[in-house]
Length: 279
Image 1 (spheres, one colour):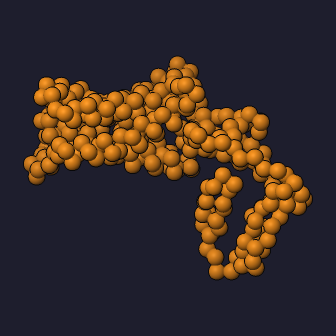
Image 2 (tube, rainbow, N blue to C red):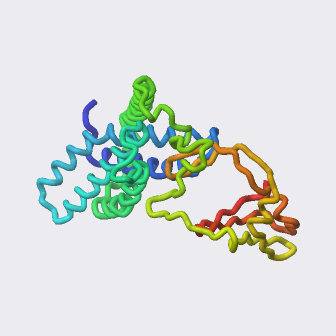
Image 3 (cartoon, rainbow, N blue to C red):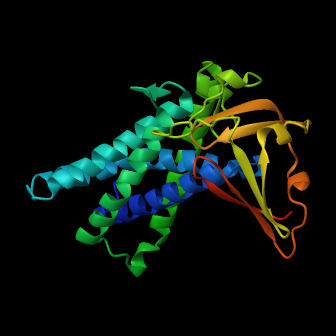
């Protein structure tokens, strides 16, 4: 296929990057099987970025000949984009699970986030304004061909990963790898790059419960009097999951009266504040 005009290539790449970022955020939030299409879409769009690289590289080579002062920022942008692609593919296939003690998915997310300000700068410094004529039959055919090719390549890579028995073949639909199922001691205790599991003294630790009747504290000994059991899966956004048999206290037994409240706010000792809507 003949290379499209540079402006079309830049607009296509910008559009694909925006979809990649949006689907990446959506993949983190997708925790049910019905939302697996978001993770698949993220993978397909990632392949589309790779397919656009040859056309974009032609533009980059011409730009480097002009010796602009900003070329180093452009090269940094390219390096981060390559890093995001390599770590994303490496994490998905299982060939690059970690680098220097950092999970591949962490590096993928970090590179993607670092790309955001550079992409914004690039768009503002070198704008590629869309024209009405861009929505031509040829452009639509090229977009359709790119999308179809990306989907085919993505499915081919997935098939190769499974046929070769690579670790990526065992990933959950969220993209997470199993870690410590039914073995709590082997389950990760950190969830992000610099997280440190807080230490608590069982004798002094208290659970604070606030409902329509007021606020009260419960000790670990009081909570241990309940023996509700549930087998459930914890799927962490940092790329791992574990099946465990959990034992604890049902929330319904902790919250006595809700009043007009429509949601429950859980505040962990790590600082995370998570609203749980009323179902």
